[in-house]
Structures are given as C-alpha cells and as structure tokens.
Image (cartoon, rainbow, N blue to C red; front, side, top):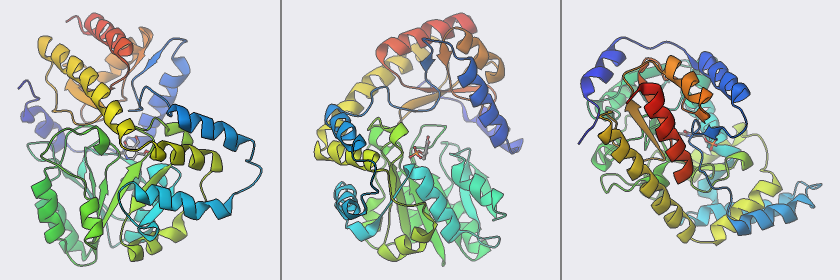
Length: 370
Ligand SMILES: Cc1ncc(COP(=O)(O)O)c(C=O)c1O
C-alpha cells in the first residue's frame, strides 16, 4: 500500500503544536472571499449532494410555518432522531450541528482540573472551547498508525482524576479509523469520573470492518457519548442538526448548556430524510467510495503517499508547503483543505462529484508538476 510513512508525521508531532485555530479560520475566510465563480469547494468535508428530494419538500412546506417555534413537535422530532439507532428519546440530545453537542459535553465534563484529552491532530472545536474557557486540555500524538493511543489517553484521565476523552472516528483531518479492539479496551478501562466522547461525524462513510459505532456502548449503559451529524452524508450542513447519544443521566448533565430548540425548517427536513430509511445513506456511501477509490488510484499513480481513508476526505503528502499549494489551487478554481500545522506538507481534500474531482486532479498535476 502506498501509505504515508510514519516518520514524517512522528517528526512533525514531536516538533510540537501551536495554537493555530484563529489563523486557520482567517485563512479559510480569505479563501472563501477570493474563490471566484465556478470554484469547486473541496475544503470543508461537505457532501456534494444536498438534502434528498423529500427533505427539500418538507423544508419548503415548513418555511411557511416558521412564524412559530413549534415546541409541541419537538418530542416527535427527538423520537425520529433516536429511532435511527434504536435509541430512546431520553438517550438523545439534539443540537445545532454536532458542534453544539460537542460544546455541551465540554461544558458538562471538563474543568480547570478535569481535562479534555485527545489525540492530535483532530477536530479542534471541543479542545478549542475547553482552552477558551480556561479548562485543561491534553493533546497526545497519534500512534504509528495515526490513531489515538488509547492507553495514554486513559493514563492521562487517571492522572487528572477524571475528564473527557475525545476520539474522532474516523479522525479529522487524517481520515482513518480507530480499531474496534482499541475502543473496546478503552471502554473497559475508563478511569473513574471519565467520559469517553466518540465523534462519529464521518462513520457513515467507513467501509472497514476494523471499526464499528460506539452506540453499542451507549446501549450497554457505559460512560460513553457518541456524536452524530446530519451535516455530512445527509447533505444538510447548512441546516445545522446533529445529536449526542448517551445514557439519560449524561444527557441531563449536558442539556442545560444547549442553545434552544432546533429550527422547525431543519427539523422537518431531517425527519423526512430519516423516513427514507437506510437506503439513502447506503447509496450515498457507495457513490462516494467509488469517487474516493479513483482519487486513491490517482495518488498512487503520482506516487503521492496518503493515509488510509475511511471518511469523505483524504489526507496526503504533497511534498510541498500547503501555504503555497492552497492558494495556487484556488487560483485554478479548486478550494482545498486549510493548513493543519504542523503537517505543513499535507493536504486534506474532500471528495466531491466525479467532475469536481477531475478538475482537482488536473489542477493538482499542474500545481505540483506531477
Ligand atoms: C469530526 C467533526 N465533528 C463534528 C463536526 C461538526 O459538524 P456539524 O456541527 O456541522 O455537525 C465536524 C465538521 O466538519 C467534524 O469534522
């Protein structure tokens, strides 16, 4: 397999991290501003198709009723979301995107003494909020397989007398999975006062049997929270709906920190998509995997090493600085993932439509000269 050699990553991780979140956001904003008409957006891990047709119809109808909050409809909405994974309403907290529920968990389960503990790099939202609040944050380098070192995560939680362990599975930005036996070990060996938060924003895209959803641990009553979103495979990033699945007592601890109820327009769209059953997700995954396989073949052909992808994006080594390559790609009409310091020579690219990926491949060949 033409995968990325560990040495490059280990060296970068050992070199240490800087707080780069604001700079990243500025870079993304700058990219969005300068992206011209016809730009292909492969920078935010969105799905190239939007909400399915029945959801669009439900959204349109809901628009004309949006003068009301629709409080009475919320129990039905919760039941619908919970039914997706065979959960009960009280095992679910719905948020404005899973970002809101990640934030609720940080509020409820971290403090200046009890850290959020995560592998690094990973999705920054939860550790960033903890840091901004003055709560403790522990970032540990990924293992030689680019996964979270579960034994070290547990050891840090033990040392702190408890906290919130955060694993993104598949991980963003690396796109690979945490093996199921590692998750099982961690659940078995969670220190006292410790909650494991599994972010499964991209699990719908996974095809590897080496991992699985941690919702089974929620059903078993463990100290585990699973975050899911409708922003990715459902094509609803702009509608802002995600949820946390957890034991009712953990949900109750997070609930006070949520914003309010969800927009009725978004709720109706989500319910209509859920009513379509698993076929929608299965078909979208199959399509995305075909396109992702094409990209992987291209990277192999160009001898560009990549990390085994199990999400709707791929991280690969360009051998050139992303700060130069990113703007050069944008000038050719392709917006790519932002810099992920210290991985300055890595690009994270979202899987778009076949036509968008063809444009990406042409632009990349020209920019890298490969
Ligand atoms: C790993 C991960 N979790 C959560 C989110 C947040 O998504 P949303 O708030 O749209 O559900 C993202 C967004 O890209 C993500 O990459």
